[in-house]
Image (cartoon, rainbow, N blue to C red; front, side):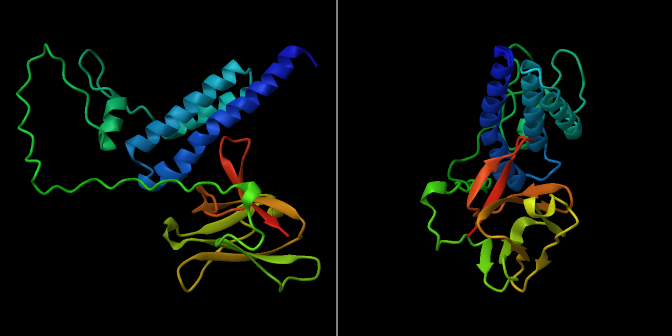
Length: 248
């Protein structure tokens, strides 16, 4: 194996580590704070696609490059707009749609005087702050008895297996929830979650003890969601992260 091949492999691992925080930011903050059609969400996903495309070309990896190009096409961003000097930037429009201030006008252009700022003491409704993403638990500090609330073990499974109860909160905003993971070859149709009396989504799966399993929830067949309190989180080859449950 020549040095260039080794360097590209190391580069791919470093890129996966760099992209991981952006994937967590998109899943835990942006996807929960803005609708799917919000301009700021499309702009961020377009940025992720551009990052993948650039890294794929730099690392000579067609798979990463194609993934970035596909993500950019899916966002439909930047939106079409008037061309020419003075035309508004689509990136500025996306920022304005997310609550950010618009770009200032040209100082030399004729413009009306800005309106007087409102009285600081006047009642004004403050925009809601996005929720903070949950901090991944320390894998080395997990207590065996502290089973996370979205995954519970029960002793009623057949001999040689353990019943694992997967639970997703009721406020995820979905009509259908499927459980996908190593235990069902990531099939979106094999294991469906059902609504419990308290509104949460639940399903019980018999798993072999003594090993760990990657898993995620698929919402309405199009949006991925991680377990809020998995045993740990690990990056996947697609630029996102998977939840991991350890069955003892």
